[in-house]
Length: 145
Image 1: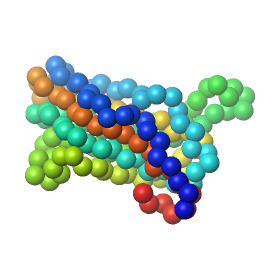
Image 2 (image 1 turned 180 degrees about the vertical axis):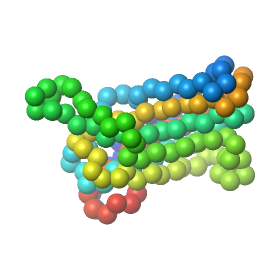
Image 3 (image 1 turned 90 degrees about the horizontal axis):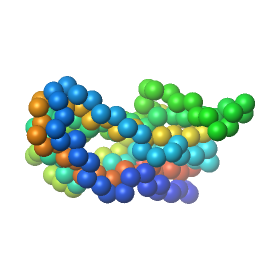
């Protein structure tokens, strides 16, 4: 079965320190990724560390398509087709660092996908750090990473 790994975010430390209680920060990682040649897509998140007293980090994969009327304009579906939730409240003891978590994308996922990171503070976090790397596993064949 042919496949490939596409690096979306090389290993990085994301710093969300100093967020107010219930604050949300959301951002898109890079440009939309062409997955039109692949029949399955899986979101792989490699977690090296998560240091927070109550924050969560959600990594969402969203479907995107272009229009023949305006091929430079992308249209996105806000509901994720794959999602990984990281929370320091349930990490220690369950997932010793480092670990990898995989979420298979539901079809149809369109011609392109994009990755969105959303951090939510559930307390006044002085320190809210997350070290991770994100890849897409794309292949033709069965829907499993």
